Image (cartoon, rainbow over all chains, first blue to last red; front, side):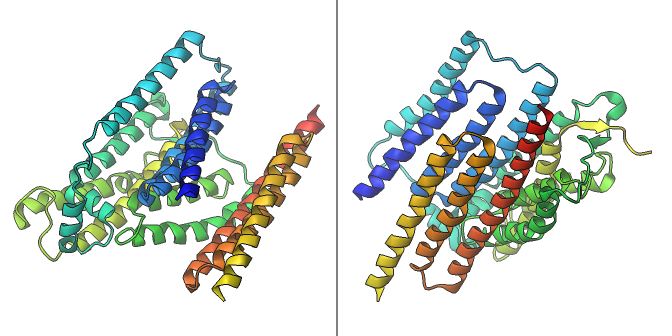
Length: 312
Length: 97
């Protein structure tokens, strides 16, 4: 127990140091790298408080995907020579706001009565009726499915926002620059060997999500990362954003989720309610399609706004 | 039997941690990119390998051992590739000066 406590103490110090490093970094690139390290420390902390689902999400999205976006943004700013260190007033304001955001939930947690109110027993008690083994997946896709649905819709809005940054003549065009393929580069080897393995791991994480830590978001992020790797190595190109199948893929997951939710009114007596006995298969189908949509959306978010003319 | 296993685990993980420490010291103290990479890859490959070996001794489940081995092999593969990419970039930068 004392060794565990020592480890926790060490992790907290490490998280605070990484946070400080992120704010104090000399340039935006350094700050982005520090942010990735901060995310990985946070993932370890989530594991320590027995929340492996959150840890997986933090590592994949909080650290990996967001880190990739921040690094891409910082290189873009630097190449545009707009990268300037924020003024000391802005910086102080950022520190104060960050501290405030951290302090509010901290106060809420510290103000809880002992023992804190919990729905854990109720969540576990109802779990058999969903056919799932992982209570987190139960919360995400059965008890609080509406939150998950809205979260996916937000992803589509974020993608629309990114695409809207393109000038009119490039609307519907291809994102980013065309990467040159270089057969002698180690990146080509990585882009050829890793995706088959990564796709298997991504699908595995989706599949075990029903009973163990994992699920649509984590699996989709891994698939998106594999796609991005192949794009960066110049092995494949991102499709034009005007492609009908691509847009269908983007909305398929949330769309199917919404249809299943509306069908709940007729067959199960409520929005996003599942008919008894069919919860597990329905959740599984929704999760599979959601994973593909999440992978497509995240890949397109990473690829950025269209920068090349749409094909005629 | 389990005592022997525990001792081997402690030895292996400690040795792994030592390689990580040595790699980190090298990363901080070596003078340029290539030598720092040299230090870092030793930590990743050998250090992680020994930690994985130590952990694999603690489980009797086949799939768990396989997963640990895959984690190590994937880290080896991506580590080696990224080291090559960084080294290439460092060499190009040096040639340009």
